[in-house]
Image 1 (cartoon, rainbow, N blue to C red):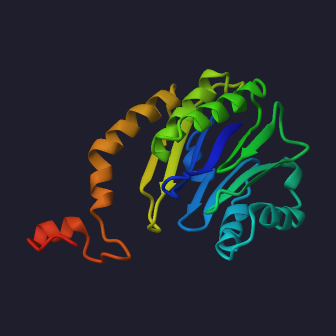
Image 2: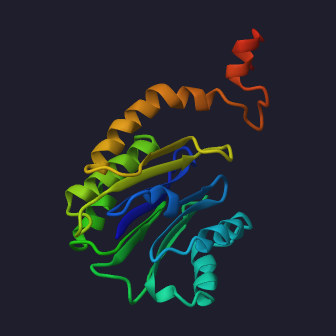
Length: 230
């Protein structure tokens, strides 16, 4: 009941997931991202362990195809699963179980894995791919928002849409972007609006927080009247 895109930005190395579904709170279930490791979208009949067990294996340098092949081989519910995975090098892999509700399928390319089930047809994924590939000059978060919007406009879920999400991680373990629409009549539209709110009012706070290289953080530095970081 979902379509999603797991992706990596070639310019910045950022990793992210965008998704939309006919049920509430898609961000809680589908999107999993790990700094320096990769991004995973697990859906249809989700298995979060494909992400929780898979991301550490990506951290060890294994490819998405190797990781998912191993994990799915030991998953007794794999034929009702759907999952897409991208690593920090842009390598991608996706799987659609044979008993996933149609229309169901996936499409992978350098830096992305796009997957969907219970859709009107393959044109939904084709439009997501087109918009994502043509927007490479934009930040990853905006590309994901545009891709999700394009997927909905192309038909999306046969039963409508109710929730949407984007999650993006940069150099730090905490999300740079985490925008969720948990219950809305027009989740893609609301996601676009909240993306603008987040960019103007939340992103500056995130960028001012401590980092591994700067444990004080720019916001605390200004509050303490300390000298700017070099």
